Length: 454
Ligand code: TRP
Image (cartoon, rainbow, N blue to C red; front, side, top):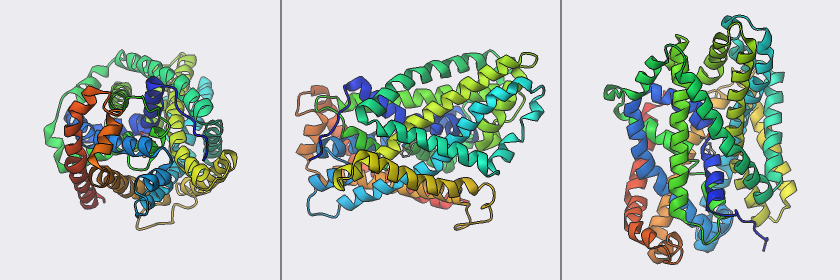
């Protein structure tokens, strides 16, 4: 039996879980998905998706992980011995590694833009930085170098272990992250012309939502809360028996939601202030923001440098704390099931992820002609994971907890052996959500995204 490490307490667990949840999904994806689907109207649907679908899955993963007390495979094997359920655990070892391989490429972009910030000392005109993004991602060496650096940083944190690596890193970076995003929001809101952006964010336009918006909201909730691939399960297996699951879930969901909203208020008003369109889609963070920073710092290049460096440092931190949670799923599996030492597991998995990441990175340049079912390698992996593997994993986790685990065991785990009366009281609601509402919701996302995808 491997001697398992544990997170110190409630607050540290929430920081680690929030560290996993808050990432590129909040800063880079949320603002433009929200923009495309009716601003404030989207937020409302997003909130409902978090409460009725995402949170129940989150709790399902927590219950399996803490009760099973092991990696995804081992936890399911100990809760349902002799069944085929542990195979689900195995599936969820593979999906976070696939996500990590392309996530690391985008994480690498944030390193590149962080370093490039220091070249803005000599940039006189915003036009000089537009177009840089396109040229950069389609080149070969620099994106590969950044991807390698990012992967190495992730490996270094995971190598140091649960307490000395993941816990220590998330505990130091998460508060910094919140301070940085608040500073950027304040700056963004004080820009001339920002009010139009605020109006765009707060004025609900229900006409733009539709079924597509609902599917987008549910998909976003899934990705943002890191669900369906065993990251929550694995982190929960490091929770102390006395930690409160209810508080952890609510704390993580609130931090994640708050951060997404703050990111919206950081990015969209600045985009309006610069006279650009919020519908510029995925490129918004990497293309639009450097342009805005150069414009804002006109005549004061140091301001551009500071703004850009602070912003991309924040993106980098957020991406790192998410990426380590993906790597840990596979590492926990190899250490506990295959008895491979942590160091070897980290090297082996990082190397594999790095190789696949190279293909993803090159798919913006020399490999752009390679198409898998009509998608580039990068888009194919993203679609495969976000639209298929995540919902599938989430569905299986809720079915396992809702229909396979005995009711009394689930209640016992959720209420810490009945010692938390409030948890006992809300349990019937949670049970209905886990058994019916979430699985049905997931099936809806799944089919509607099949119908919607281009
Ligand atoms: N939630 C993270 C983000 O918003 C990404 C992430 C981490 C993730 N672990 C995950 C996404 C597991 C899906 C599954 O950037």
